[in-house]
Image (cartoon, rainbow, N blue to C red; front, side, top):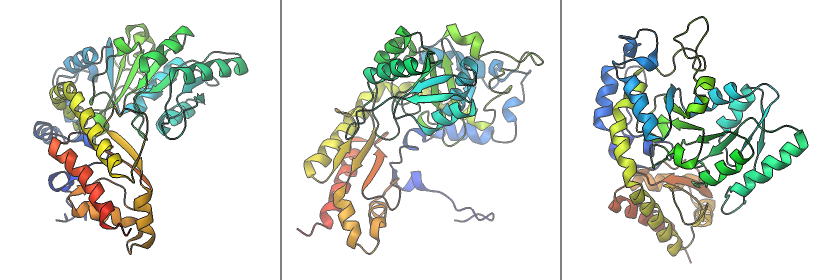
Length: 382
């Protein structure tokens, strides 16, 4: 169906297994969709607002922020328009132009953009390189010490990618936080691919800030929404208010996400809180898929071992060889997968790509691996 505006109806989630890592943990459930529809017009969430979004009780934003702070093992939380706005707010609060921060070698581009917009330099750690691309506490220690010796000043902040979006590596966040704190450096944990999917406690990991992406990992769909959770030690510094408008938090320009996205986030929270308790099942599915692919040959998994996250990156030279002679060239793989009821791989990618097994059942996880193998074997001319 195509609507009168020319936009086609999208039926991906209803008709296919969607393995796009950006979307798997952002899929909404029925109750969330109902909530979105009833709050979608204009500034509907502001109907009962008395000036401060974070203190609202209808919808229950105040209670949600208290609950989510506890859920993340932190002492306060604020709504943001995604993880990148959360990172920007912390950098802006803790730095001055000309300062520098340290970030891991697998940091998302938005970390770098947030620093650049604040006129702050970023020193990136090394990684272990191919095939694991691991980032360790030792990498952070080396980057911190070397850069401080060269610059003569300590960094204002460390930003640690808990799970990177390229390889699905889960870093030793607690170990890295200790290295940073031993040098007097506060730590922001970017959890775009972890909180909402897996258990994360800022208190247990010893971090000062947690940036969350609602659309990637909190089952809220594509709306712009995120969370910044923080320790009490930095509450007054980051969660400060305007001088001229004392009820308005300064770092979010008064109010942040204030449409139906925040309602989706609240409505999804009970579901998210329950599903993280099944993270061991998600890891088991990822490990099963990796084993099946490696046992079949022709698939080379990138990232650390054992696999501890649903995001799987792999090199597939066999597919790339097929693409050289296939009439569809590199587009054959996405086409064949779709014919088998699977979408989410970028069309044209055959040499290296990533996918996510989050939310699949046992049978679906096995079917996904079998389909990758069957497509490879279908064109095997040996």
